[in-house]
Structures are given as structure tokens and as C-alpha cells.
Length: 380
Image (cartoon, rainbow, N blue to C red; front, side, top):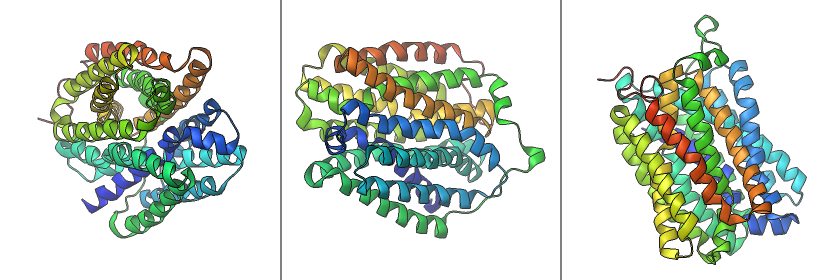
């Protein structure tokens, strides 16, 4: 459990480093002297880095031992967040956001394999869920706390605190996390070949559309709430979303090994209902909180569900494909959201989420043979 908790903290740091600008876009854009849509690309460049480097770096380091790679990734977070905390240059900040994204690509490609190797087949889903608990914790505690501290003391303090956490985590990994060998060359399956396995393409489509829809709204959630005169409640809305996400990951962790398909369908429905509420009823602060709750319940377990599904369908090699797809469409979410903001305004965000999540639901329902089967392989 100590090792899994350290992995969960690495996931926490990955999401925290990625999403902190979403809660502090107005302050960061003002200090950097750029527009909010330009500052929103701090999330986009992070995701692009993870996307374009995940497959080549995973292939190049497949035979390396796992623990040194994990330590290198966390050290990358420490360096990138330190530079972000002190930088007055938009260009320099973007360069080190790119470096942080490379570190995140390593993190996401490593964590699931680590968790699976620590558990027997019938508990691997639960081990992944424990590891991925860092994601909703970052959303429920880290991002709201960072946003709150940023409003009180300035956004730079938040990035300094993340650097401090990275230093602590390096020591934790050194003392608690076991090392595992890489894959022997004769036992490795080419990463791109795993795409041809039944079910992998369908899971990756779900990843692409779901992540795109989520990040269109989440990247610019501050701007969306300001549009509806809720600018003073950004941290509270994020906290409601995050707490609901944490509840979701707890439910997912307990049930993923037996009910992956059902959980994925229910999650997609919850996100669709949330988007519909925000699209037509966001003038009511109460309903915004209801929508944030449903959104968190639908989104919180998605990381565990889709990482488990793609690994069941395509093996560990498919994780690099998932990281590339996930981060590529996370980047697209920031870019598309910026275009929507400039041309249609923030009210267009939930409509975009709704348009993308409905095909997700259809593919999950149809993909019962290989992508989202009623029973996971290796379970009873």
C-alpha cells in the first residue's frame, strides 16, 4: 500500500501540474501579458508534449528498469514547476510546460504497468484504481486549494508548493517503491501492432472523444463561470467537482474488476446530463453545482476504466497508445476551447461536450465483444 500510495501521489502531481493553470488563468495571463486563450495553451503544450513523446520514449526505454524512469519523471516535474514559479517570460514558461508534459508522458505510461505487476489478475483493476486515486484527489483537493492559495498569495506560490511535493515524493519512491525490470526484447510486442488487436481502436476512440469533450470545458472553466457571474466561486465549483470525482474513483475501484462495462456506460450518461444542465440552465448557481457533481461522478473513474479496458484489449503495450491519444486530445481540447472562446464565447463549451459524449456512449454500448465486455479477461 505504501508503494501504491506513492504511485498515486505521482498521479496526483501529474494532474496538479497539468491543470493548475485552469483555475488561475486570469492571474497568469495578466502577469504574463497575454490573453486568457493564449494562457490556456499552457495546458495544450503540456498535453502535446505527452502525446508526441509517449510512444517513442516508451519504445526507447522499454528495456530499462522501471524505478529510475519513475524518479526521472518526478524530477522533471520539480524542475519544470520551479521554472514556472519564477518565470516572467511566456515563451520560457511554455518551454518548461513542454518539459513537464514529457515527464507526464513517462508517468502515465509507467503507473498502470507498475500497479498491474503488484497485484494478481483478479485484483489488478483495484490496484490500478488505488494508483489512479491521485487523479480525483488532485481535482478535489489540489486544484481547488491551489486556486484558493493563488487568489490569496499569488499563483507562483502554488507552483513552489508542487516543487516541494516533488522533492518529498522522490524520497518516498526511493524508500518504498519496488523496482521492476523492463521487458526483454524477445517478449516485447511492437507498440503500434497492439492497435490492431480487437477492441483497442474502439477504446481509443472513446478516450479521444471523452478527453476532448472534458478538456474543452475544464481548461476554460474559470472563463465559463465568470460568464455566469460565478467568478468568486471557481474554487468551490472545482472542489465540488473534485469531491464527486473522488467518490467516483472509490466506487470504480471497488467495482471495476466486475462491472467495467456498466460503470463506463453510467459514467458517460452522467457527463451527458451534466453538459445538458450547463448548456441550458447555467443561470442557476444551484444547478451549476448539481452539474459539477454529476460531471465529477461521471469523470472521476474514467482514467481507471479506460486504462483497464485498453490494457485488457491490447496488453501493456497499448498503454503508450492510450497516453498518446489521451494527451493529444487533451491538447486539442485546449486548442478547440480557445477557438470556441474567441468565436462563439464560453456558452458554447457545454454544447460541445454534449455533442462529443453521445458518440462515446454509443461506442461503449456497441463494443461489448472486445472493447467493453461484460466480464474482464482473467476474472471470474
